[in-house]
Amino acid sequence: MMLINTVVLFLRDMLPIGLLISLLLAMPGISIKPLLWRLTITLAVALAIYNYLSLISQFAQGTGFELLKVAFFAGAWLGMCAMAWMSHHQGFARHWGLNLLVLGIGVPNSLHFMVYFFSALSSYTDSKLLIGSILGLGISSSIAILLHVVLFTLLKQKFTFPITTWFVAAQTAGIATLFEQIDLLPAPVQAWDTSQLLSDESEYGHLLNALFGYEATPSISYLCVFFIALLLPYVIRHLTPLSVRSIDKEAS
Image (cartoon, rainbow, N blue to C red; front, top):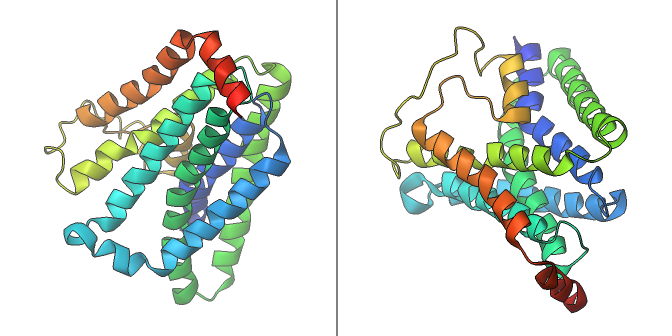
């Protein structure tokens, strides 16, 4: 059981970070070196927050951790909007958009991983945790590499922006779930139930959730946030005048 749980943990929390790296590297003008230092900062921020997580969780009547994750996911979506604004140029907005995107996706997923992994590490000392970690890391890395190869060689970067926008929207939609958990949104109204076909708690469910935001029982609020987060970057990309992009490029 511990072996399977560890693999699921990697699929749920580490795979989104791997997918984000693959998607960003497939975008024109983004190389591995600037992405690596952003990932290093993301890890440092996540570790710093983890050390004070018990204190943070006590804020706002015990909802501090959830609100923190909301802030990061919202930041990731703003980063996607900034990159949509400067999708054809290297500009100030695009660089800060990339910063927000990496931090917004990387930090909350890393924190989730740390909470459960370090807890398991202190409770289990057998080889199943190590084997599960190797398997989970291998599967997550393989999927991320496969996605990069497909985008970079087969699709010729043509679909990188829409796939990245979908991916970020799926992560951002988690804001609705978090608000429902802390009663900042009304009780969830279930849109449908496909758990009999594929549970989102299964290995494949976590995989599809990381890739496409799959939810077996999504709420109306979840779907609303998802579609808003999906559509607005497209609107920004297609309505932003080229002159504005050029001004931002010169300012950088």
